[in-house]
Image 1 (cartoon, rainbow, N blue to C red):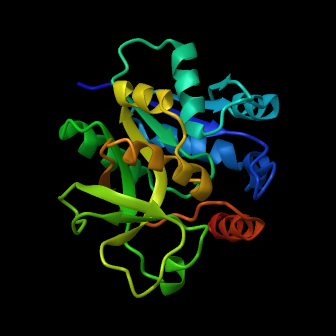
Image 2 (spheres, rainbow, N blue to C red):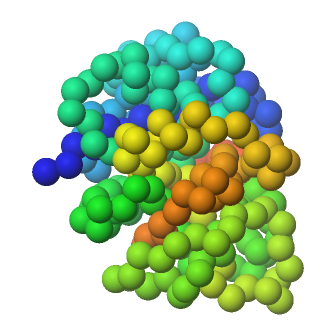
Length: 246
């Protein structure tokens, strides 16, 4: 059976919302909420990869595992590869990259992505969800993915492009991209060996590095469309959502 390691890249200096990993919801930091989601998925060991001691300390105080990485990484993908190498955990087949700003991601979707990609022996995969609200097509904080075919519950399809900006009229086979990736270790190693592409830098979408170097990014249909925390407004929305459940 394939072995998966979950790594969560996190840093304090996010450009749109500095310090967001340690913002509190129900008395617990965002990064520790995400860590708990990863644990609940129960598909492998979980570590936060960070350049910041404050994040390391927070995760550990809340019972989690974390590792310090270089402050020179340009993307989360590069950060998690360093963490994987330094952790030196044996016999890992796949690495799951879970974004540290998705505290409401559905654990069932994490498991679903892991199982679909591994069972089909694919090299790289990510989640996509149906877009139900028209304004999301033009919201640049919501990343969209165009698939080569219609995405269904039982069918894994290939991504054609990822983008932030688009026209509402052009919405065939366009989905909300969820910030989670599963890679074979060999593919992650290949991706981090490649230079950043211009599109990747301009659009702030590191998955374009894979696509533009002829690496297939396979899409699995997610059951829910989680709110990623990119702005203070997002934080307030998620905070109200989670705290209202108590």
